[in-house]
Length: 162
Image (cartoon, rainbow, N blue to C red; front, side, top):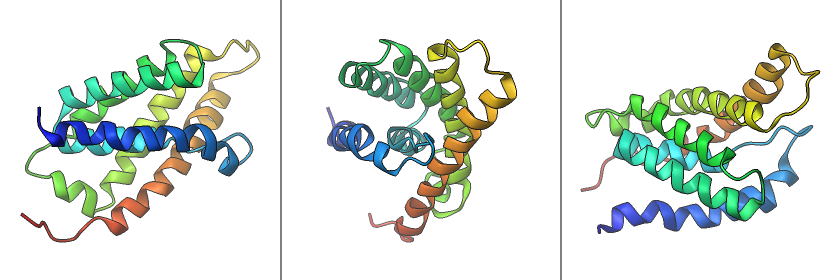
């Protein structure tokens, strides 16, 4: 097995700890960024749809076990997110995604889909309408996560070192 295939899992565990312990401290009115999804979309755009789907499944499974949430909810949403993010994969344009503003826009779309999927699975509130669900549970966390992705765009190396 190549080190390039194991490297995302090495980065995943510190980001998982940040997601569980640090992100609730920076959440605004219950709206929090999804650092795991940023990592998932990053490696899906680098390695492809199949890799992103499997990596999303593994990330969601570990997050479900460690966070103590409903077992399978994050696993399903992260698998779906990795699968959908894989449609943006093009091996000829891998570095172009991270050097331009397309990476934050892809993360925005994927975060909206991920957040709405999690809300539909875990929300049992009958008083929530679809517009509130889309705006408060989908769009706002997507904007927050996408704003953090601009740091990746700014700090991604402009030259490819081979």
